[in-house]
Image (cartoon, rainbow, N blue to C red; front, side, top):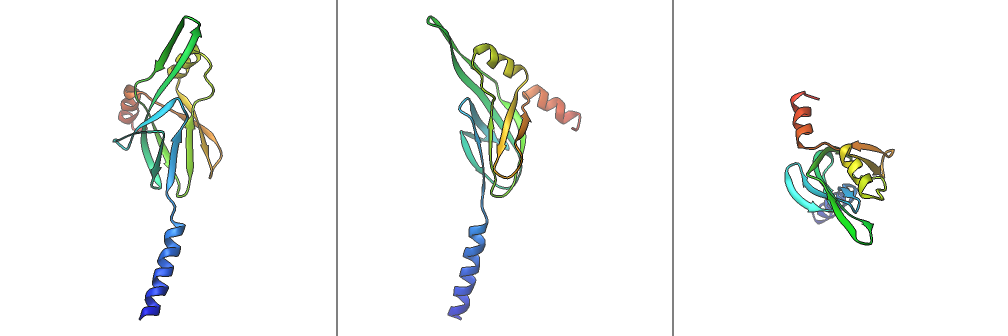
Length: 139
């Protein structure tokens, strides 16, 4: 009986070591506000495999000249991220060197998606009114 428990424990341990979580992280100018409606407020989160609704906020500080500087911030921006078991996904903006570039990004918010399991791509972000319209249209 004891040998059966050891074998069973070994099998369970082996299976558990093969079950890996997944992670989602964001670049320095983004913050994960929520995942599937649950408040997170982090730069990196562990996720289960599947499709997740992610709310992000953009925030970055720009120096215009020696006397002028300021923050560029967004309201929540939403996207759906599909993630596989053991996958590490990072969402990041392209380099934004000025306040004007940051404002342009917020007019058409698209981030780079970098993954350890699939080809890199681009991910569209939507504001609250865009996501509601998208849902109502059934897309």
